[in-house]
Amino acid sequence: MNEKIKEYKYDITRITISAIALILSFINIKIYSIDLSWIAILLCAIPIIYNSILALIYEHDIKADILVSIAIIASIFTGEIFAAGEIAVIMEIGGLLEEITVSTTQLRIEKLIELQPTTATIINKNNEEKINALNLKENNIIKIRPGEIVPADGIIIKGISTIDQSIITGESIPVDKTINDEVYAGTINNQGTLIVKVTKDGKENSLQKLIKMIEDINTDDSKIVRQADKWANYIVVMSLTIAILTYIFTGRITNAVTVLVVFCPCALILATPTAIVAAIGNLSKYGILLKNAEKLESIHTIEHIIFDKTGTITTGIPKVTEEVTLLNDTEEFLKITASLESYSEHPLAKTIVNHYHEKYPDKELYEVDDFNMEISMGISGNINNKPCIVGNEKLFKKHNIKIPIIKDIDKNQILSSTITYTYYDNQFLGILLIQDTPRENVKYTMNNLKSNGYDPILLTGDNENVAKYIASPVGINTVESNCIPETKLNYVEKIQDNGEQVLMVGDGVNDVLTMSKSDVGIAMGDVGSDITISSAGAVFINDEIKFLPYLLHISKKTLKTINRGIAFAMTLNIIAVLFGIIGILTPITGALVHNIGSVIVIIFAALIFKEKPDKFLSNNLERI
Image (tube, rainbow, N blue to C red; front, side, top):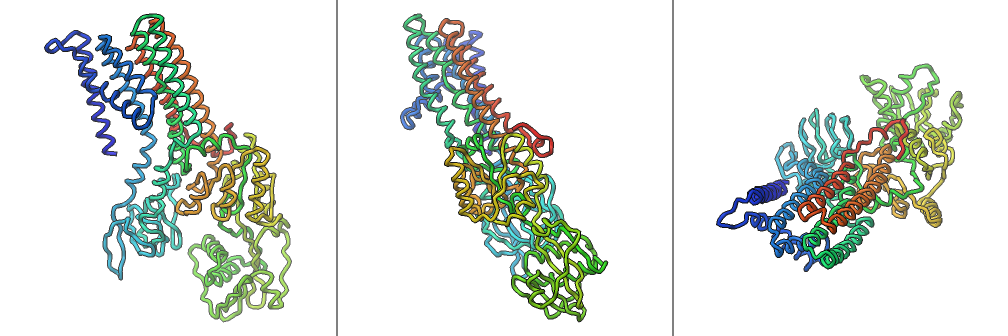
């Protein structure tokens, strides 16, 4: 960033000196009879001519600057020294404004780089030492004090705190973190001291990958950018032809020079990449990363949106959704169940223990003796010298214990839940129903999509009961259950065979095949996952599906902005050329019109960067 600032200062100084020289020339002040406009030609015109010649030789680029260069040279040969200097200064001012406008959307990369700590506190045999954060290795143990930036991805092994993850996920509210929770490089530890086990080498952490993803975005990949460049080539040829014809029929070189100045396709060339960069920069502010500009265009034409269930429509985190207490002592039932489950490493065990601590945060658990685990069925042990069994129906059939009938609960909920029975001291204490629950506000998201003509489709490996129990409340009508990866792939191919385009949203792991085949694949969550990044065209690192309507909105707005910018640029060019031919515009006023048009197009495109997703994150349906 410092280099960029130095470059801007140099350009501003060069342009300022040239502008002062032109003013002095205008009031007829000379030094040794030398027109001071030559200073502007030296400082501004020569760089334009030099760069256009280099582009012509090495890149075979005959767009924009080559026309300006011809106009400047023609003005000098016809004795219009002031006009040549003013054209150059105005063009350089326009170029500087364009560069500053476009570079605004690149500042996020600079901010991300600044967030990578230079050092980390590593713990070795109870000794602490500072090392370069990028030299951290997997399994290193580090200490992160309050107020410090997390230097690497890792898992908390000691401590409780709140973490500001806004720079990575776009979340404005700090997230509570405790033992076994993940933390990401670049996030900020707000409160307590944390001891963290590093899970990724310093150079491979989430922050570094996020920076690389943004840096690797290439607007030149865009089909519409390539098309605009093609049009620009035609315009260059047209402008040269019209300028020559203007001189032949009018006999006035100034009119021909004016045509060259105003017909430069700068606005046309810059309208597209500016809008795309602004859109990608805007999305990155809210935790949505696109891998390339072409995906932004593809999203604009999507007709079908397919969702995976687990980790996409649902949170991917099981929760206790129903408690059935059989002996009228809910706390004791949950305490005994959680005590036994606390000795298990099964994912559902953590769900049950967390559920108990959420309801009774100040209560301790019982000690367990003779703990035993029976795979795929449940666990057993002794609590207060009394036998306890917690598990599913298979476990109790094995022990010849008749399970109780669950009453007063919706049948579909039972069929779609994992059911856990607790048997203690020769009697059943209660039953827990556990489900992977829908994400918050996912219904609003689906309603928004449907109001804009999309038909959300759910493809899941779960059985029909589970699929419909999740899909119905959130507003998804089209459901395919019992899907294996090949089934999902075939479903996508069938749609594409009809000439229609598909967007697939999944968790980036078991949906890699389908997302890769889809016209656009969107992965939920973990930016640190290599497989997620490689398989998806976009990543929601905020892990929030509610931003999907906003992504669709930005895609459509970007394409509309580009088309309007191109239409404005073409219209302005045609009018200006006509005025140039008949002499209403001079090379000086033509340069002003040209640059004003370019800046208007760029500022209009850059306004996309200021868009906000607020109206798409509620139940107030918005037209995308």
